Amino acid sequence: MKKLYVFALLILSAILLFTAAFLHNAHGPYWLSYNSDPEYLYLISSLTLAESKQTGSPGHPGSTLQILGAATLKISHALDFSEKDSLEFAVLKNPEFYLTIINTVLVTLNTLLLFIIGLTAFILSKNIWLSLLLQLSPFLSNNIITHTGFYGNGVPEILYLPNYFNNIINLCLLNPLLFLVWFFSAGFILRFGCFSAGVDKAARKVVWQDTSFRTLSAVATAQMFAVLIVAKHPAGWYLAPVFSLSGFMLFLTFLYLQKINYFNNFNLKKGVFFIVIILLFTCAWRIVEIRNLFMQKSQIKQESLAVYQKVESDYKDYLKIYCLFDPSYGPSSSPVSALAFGDFFVNEGRYSEHLRKIYGNSYFYNALDKTFYVWAEEFSIEKIILRGNGNRIVFHLPSLLENENASKIDELIL
Image (cartoon, rainbow, N blue to C red; front, side, top):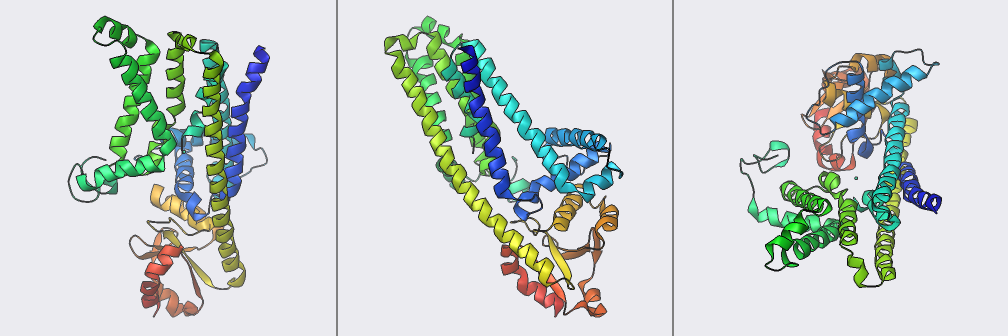
């Protein structure tokens, strides 16, 4: 029977592995513009750390990921006995290969951890249904103080109240399943921690002495404060760490009910049926979302690859200028622009000479400062035109940037 339970715990781990591979296929190469930020930033940072150098992005909230990436780069390069280049040249020459290795390591670790979490929960609770409920955590998650704007910009004000409460409502609407779990947990805490014993303080004290109940209260409080903080600068991905705890909250809720023999008051089959309904509802919800995400990303990938292939095939003899950075869309979709993006914004061009040796001269337009670069070296577009390239230049820009700034670039050329 225990072997059957272990097999059951492997199911959601396998689904996580399959989902990661499924969505990775939809996303396409890492150099596509919507993938390269932050993947290429992390790759260059990891390479810098692997060479025991100071990275230029200490403020980026991914230090542990960069350290893991650095270790992965060094180990994978050392194990590749056919590789004759140094680690630096090997990574810059074949970045997609090393990004794929890092991705594989991360997915493998998460898959193993999900199984270990489920197995540990089963050993502690002796309840396979609660263990499966805890394993749902990844599937319940959708993956700056002094100024009102993003990244410390805007007016110096703690909160801009007209927008703040609307932001909270929008976060709820964008993540309905996750907020339902939070409201359910908050109601559970109030029901058993405040109102169940009436005015009997001793009875309430017994409830709060339970470890699982106190942990549930702490996690629910952490989620609440996370929403209040993120609502200032709302973006769903900022909530990923705390919303990943939603499955843990459900686990703690039912674990406490099991401890106080709450399920003895009604048919056990009804309780199991209720948990199964939650499992099925969550799975169905995520299957629809994953399908929609797969279709959306696949379409973007196909369009981006088609544009890149057309530029490379139909304009072979043209001088190509790629977007180095656009605040809305990142760099344009090309391998060299992804590398330049990571190198320029992480290390201020530390690897530009090595990149020039590998890929030759590549030209970029930075939408932030309206400046042209050869890798990280600034150049004048007028000089390019005077050299006779004025009628054979192709600008490869993200669509929004192209619509808004095409006229400005035309003015520069004319």
